[in-house]
Amino acid sequence: MITIYGMGDSGNCYKPRLLLAKLGKPFRHVEVNSIDGSTHTADYLAKNPNGKVPLLETEDGRFLAESDAMLLYLGEGTRFLPEDAFERALVYQWLFFEQYSHEPNIAVRRALFVYPERAHQATPERLAATLDGGNTALSVMERQLAQTPFLAGQAISAADLALYAYTHEAEKGGFDLSAFPAVSAWLERVQADPGHVPIDWLPGD
Image (cartoon, rainbow, N blue to C red; front, side):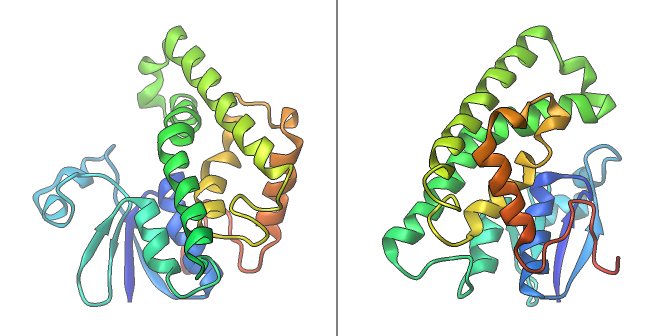
């Protein structure tokens, strides 16, 4: 059985759990995090030298880090990864956008508000920069989603799951999603897709 090492309330850790739930594929969750130091033990670092979550362990004992890489691996041969080369490249495009333009602003700003141990990092300058960067990323998504129902086209894909994870929590970071009606409608479409589970869902719930 696949094992996902991660935090129950992390958007990055939510991504592979959400995809596995939508695929109806069983997996095991092991709670680890940087707060209690469990991601910095010798045992964990032997699995993932980067000392971060999530981490996927395959059925045959191999390890894969980085949440978007997990979406590509788990999505292979499913409706979440197109067979057409160009359509698949569009999925990659949005995964790169998520990591470079979206996550560093929206996920980081959420963390500054949600996790007390990060409060000292919430300087006025950082809050302003992440708000501006996050609104820019949401505007990019808004323009695309005004044209297509999902980010990479007409069908839901791994790109939507990657960007859903922190976008649907954006208001916890002080973002006003009412200013982005196409994004808000897209969130509802992702939630309506079969097999959807909330961010705090864990196997056995």
